[in-house]
Length: 119
Image (tube, rainbow, N blue to C red; front, top):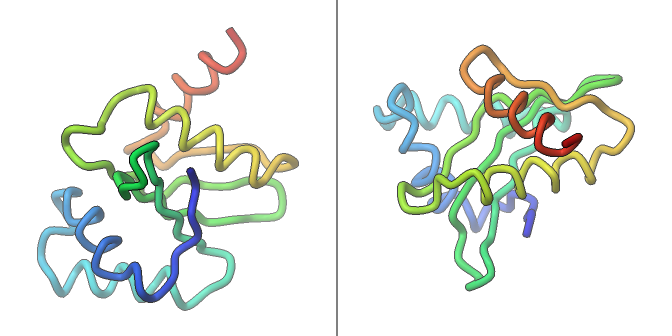
């Protein structure tokens, strides 16, 4: 289930984002979080599984006709296509009139999700 970021989820969010190698240094991670939180056009969502545990996070940038998936991170045991695709589907349903896109790092995931969705 997609859950909007709240300040009481900060440690969980930072923990999930720390699985991204370039965000391991705490100062870099804190700067990244602040960048997202400074703008309404850069929402952060957490992904909650059926057991009610947070297992993933997605950081977006919302434009006029697109949603750019900037950061996508899951716990190591939950990096399955099923969970990732379910999260992307939830983002797509949250912004039904916008095209889902990825950065250079995660565009292959978005492309595979799109293929699965239209298969």
